[in-house]
Length: 450
Image 1 (tube, one colour):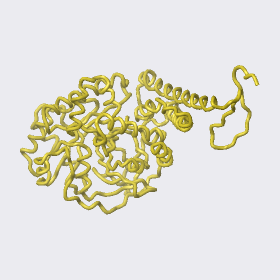
Image 2 (tube, helix red, strand yellow; image 1 turned 45 degrees about the horizontal axis):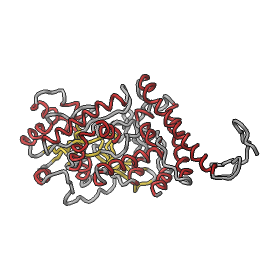
Image 3 (cartoon, rainbow, N blue to C red; image 1 turned 90 degrees about the vertical axis):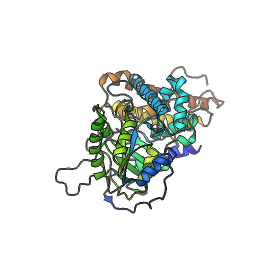
Image 4 (cartoon, helix red, strand yellow; image 1 turned 45 degrees about the vertical axis):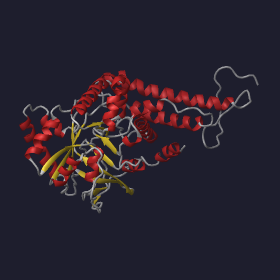
């Protein structure tokens, strides 16, 4: 019941907020130590003795439906996860981040023989979840209750299959086109304190004297609720990967990566630490990444590379003095927000049917609708943002939106029918709203025998 109440309350939270100005704010007091269960003592010492630390976060970015369908994309993500498991088994220092629960669920169901290896790697903290949501939602478009369920359902699945200790305290929006200015408040209500944003969306007009280029890391707060803030790492997600993955020579990779690292430290507001994702779309982890890290660290003791999880990297970032911003993170160009309006309408219709079905279903002990799950898939920015190829929309996305609305509507109708059936009368007129109504009722089919 507490989750149901929270979901209703969240409806008031996720609203579009106006952009506000940036301001300086006191940074948190640096902590003496950071609790990082995925780092051994030698790595902790390496971090303590270095002047600069680059936290390398290996991952693969997964789109649900874009140039291809989820059915085909999920086969690629399965291979990414298999490759990560093998690298984790081969090297205890290797780390990998799972971007979205939806794709992990597909792997879990498709490769039951590999579940034990994945679970062991997660519980050794070699593989971690970057975000507990079923999908990466488009937070400026998706209906609020669906965003709540997106995160709740993913958290529950991780806790059930891996343990509650492995539910992350981070959010991961590597390629969402924009994020509601209320998103920090939404996250803090769930106890999530950190957020990676991987699509650079801040735009400045030429010669704008008031333009504020956002740094590599900062605190982002909801404009009308300053106490609701999250620590953000802000870098285009394929930056590091694009710089090195086509280079065959490892020394040349180090040289190219050093240029990226130096550029990010220039954006880092004098922080000792930077957050550096290492991955791209449906790419296996870089096979020589452990060797590359060793080569770098052997040659450079002042700036070191450390493979780790997002949770751990953010813990170190939080010890630094970082700026704070009230800013709308939506870009001037907001994807295809006006295309395929049927997707946006279906999202809102399904929220109405689903929340109503939950409300009335409690009166007759009906379980929650299965359409909540497909609604969370629809929340992914590719789906509700309507950026896919026409063939993908027609074959994968539109049928899922239609299925979600139809299932949700049928489940609501079933709940109302069960309520009405408990009344000992040949004809029941049921008012599902919270207020009195007076209107003409239209009967369809045969009129009951009075």
